[in-house]
Length: 351
Image 1: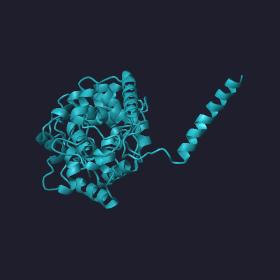
Image 2 (image 1 turned 90 degrees about the vertical axis):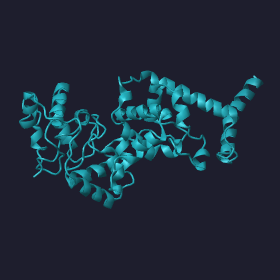
Image 3 (image 1 turned 135 degrees about the vertical axis):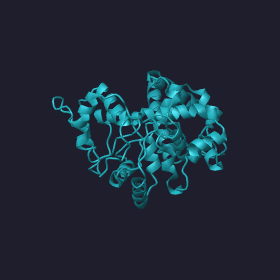
């Protein structure tokens, strides 16, 4: 009986002793000494096990490796990832290498993970490290684009990386190079899920940037890109792109097929299904609404799907738009996206 009492007393005193040691500050938490070997092994083993289990429920999209937003992923990597993970032709600083744990060199680390595991790491981040979760919640397409880029990174030359992440065909307008690196109207010939912004209204562009800055509108790419903009810079960027000649996506070509359903939705909507006419807002007369003609097909379809599922916030009209498209079928969305993607160049209706 006495032994049992001693065991109970010891069981109660051990956690109290641990709390006392922690309170006294006797546990060293500085990064100078690193972890004990057993601690480092246990943390790494736990992390790999967690990622492996989380990846079991991930369904990999077919053909994601051919992501048409590869350049956008590269620009994001340069601005948000390369400082810690390095990049082709760029060494990491001594400060980064002194982190605990030090961020891995992705040229060596990417091959150790499956595609699904890379997706989990990019989307969710890693606790107890400096690896953050993806800023745009629910934007799985952006995460898969980053995975596609990461898979190419180990074999990517410095010249190829420079072209994707830094050049961006910005021309002489250096102040807007980050914007031009991505919003080049399909310059690399793919159907990118990135809008052409030249010729949109100054009001709409400024409000969109402010929505990303405030976190109301979610996109891992755009939230990071806009995060360092001041109010004057937001205004200057909006003014600049509003005054540029309107451009059209590289994949937007006039369609010879007349889609009666799409035309009906655009011009009159569907009163029976309570679907509003697209032209009621997007005919170019109201600066609060974007022009849709000539935008990339993937971008148009993605935005309609986000609005329909109430996941596209960040504008004063978000609820109006969500209600307007709530009863669209997948077929309707495909028809509308194809209609506008093959329509007139963005900006031609602006009055």
